[in-house]
Length: 333
Image (cartoon, rainbow, N blue to C red; front, side):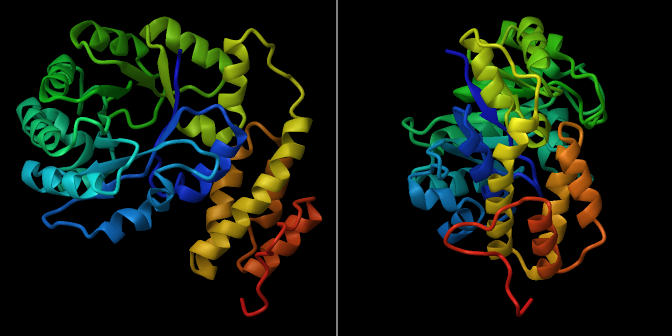
């Protein structure tokens, strides 16, 4: 059975958006945004703060298992923290070798490690020894730093180090998120490792999913920005897999999305400081615009607003309902 994985997206796809997207359905598991490991042993509360799902058997509210991702470059420190995390019984532990952010790469983490396959092997081997065999252990990589000259060496290093599975974002660090994604390289990686490989990158539509699987040869696909832009993408892919046709009319989807927007807004208001809450909602609405004309109109209406009260009022005017059992409008804000 093919699996659909929900990708980590630092600064956007946190526990709140994971809750909303997995409620729509279609995902077999989700991966958390990275937890940075840099020289010290994190207390268990640090893992729970980023991944509150750990207090619910490592599952989202809809029951989707959550894999927790770690980012760092020191084998011993990563291994110690992985052992600490394992005590919380996550649905899996993942290592980040794909983040292209300059701030992360300047400190030796993320995709910059793809310049040194031997270091990848040392890191993965150390973490493999620290993680109980019962907990799935995976890694996410890109195709390289500037080119693909060491792509296969990196994949072999991760496989030989002991990961159970591998996700490949089919671009180099230098390419960032610019299209296209080179799914043919994922197929080459599949040829040199025995572990399951999932393809990631530039899957925005059901048609993209078809092409990604055909070119990469992968059964499993990870959805990232495409999932944020279209919360129904995974569900529509599931329909494809059982022979159902995709609906062309998105108006029903928008009506289904309205209470999810309400829940998202309520949870964001409960999680972040009031001055930052509107910005979080604007980020998601901006991502939704290509698929929903209503989201474009709502985004333009909310964009100049700065307070929770103003945004809440505008949401109501656009048909976003109040959430049963609570309302994000606080007069004090």
